[in-house]
Image 1 (cartoon, rainbow, N blue to C red):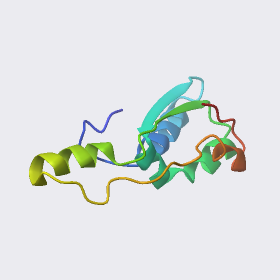
Image 2 (image 1 turned 180 degrees about the vertical axis):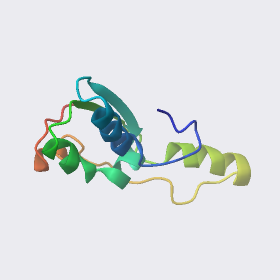
Image 3 (image 1 turned 120 degrees about the vertical axis):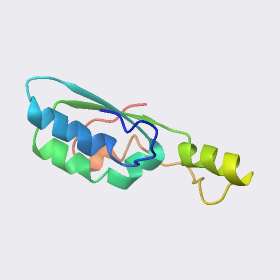
Image 4 (image 1 turned 135 degrees about the vertical axis):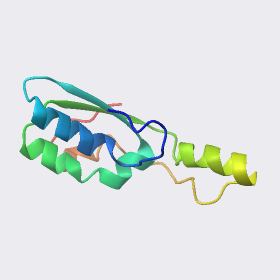
Length: 101
């Protein structure tokens, strides 16, 4: 599944859980940006509770990159699309899965 660049942020992990529920015998690989992941990271608890076989990859650029591209094109400036570094390696440990860099 892909949001086709429509900036549907935060859907990668929930969609991965949904895909796994449809076919739990298969491993699901999911990719999101860091901004999108932050919007649905609480779903790690769901994936762990269900023992879902999901590999989620986070593209880290400390911002909402797709939004930044559109802002730059339309307004020739950026506003509210950058944030500081997040320790994604330790985030999963709180929910149970392993995180690596």
